[in-house]
Image (cartoon, rainbow, N blue to C red; front, side):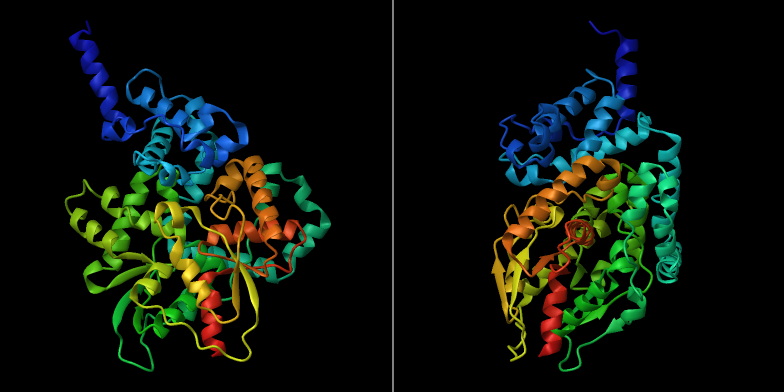
Length: 447
């Protein structure tokens, strides 16, 4: 029989653990049926039980029950997980894997079982530095743009200087995205209204972090499409990160801080909807209610905010999609649609983007094999698991080439950057990669 001292110690250790603070029913939901295994990219890579959702849940349940310690081995297993949430769509029991995944990553951070000097440095600079300070992030973007456009980047690459870097840093350098000429606050006024009609609805537009720096024109396109649908568009010029990267990497404290800042900046009661055009961001924003459930000052507002979040495709279709007029100069385009994992599995938005594409004059939708299969982006996965990320990207590129499309349409900046990189490596630069809303906005401008 367990002694009183041992029971007290057990309760104390349970109280300190992120996994043990979960409602235990979340960990108990898994029926071990295995329907998640065929859709799991990492299980498909190795065929090992621990690399599938069922095996991961079993390991984490053992940690929650004090049957196993939170070790570096278990933490690395959770780091190998993409967090694509394909398992949640396949699960007949409704296992809330996103909660388990974030709790496990948070436990890894809390225990420090994978901590190294490099990891602490990178976390301090990125998650705890730049991504908590939007002006600093934009300043870095300006510096990167000057570096890229001055010719210095080209000169250094030709000189072979980057061969002196470690493989990790060389990979990071080759993946550096092209920075937008102007950021969102230079392209979109804080408030814009339709010119041809009184506004039917009032929406807030989120510009994102990655989107703002490297795909700012997608935000301009989104504003234009919303205006064409009779919306007054409010776009705060300085927006905090939504916190998705922090939550997915275990820093729930920073994620909560950013959620509070977002809610303060965009009071949900002032808008008909809060519009996201990034699948990963939108999925996280919809869970602000869960993130701030224990915050008495923000819990109610977080629930109201999460209820107002809409993906832009979902909003357009749900409020009455207005197809662009067919013009004589509409170019015929064969378009394949790639599904962002968090847009499909995290938000449940699958039909609406295809409906938006089908409404564009000249567009023929072609089938993309394994459209819902992860491209390997998954936030920072390309840096933490480069070999697996590359294999997933090669698989995606092969499917794109097989589809015979002129354009790959999608709804997430991470996917866009990843697939552009893969097509460039494959020498398939004739295939364009574009946000669905960009193709729709171009059709509106032609008309």
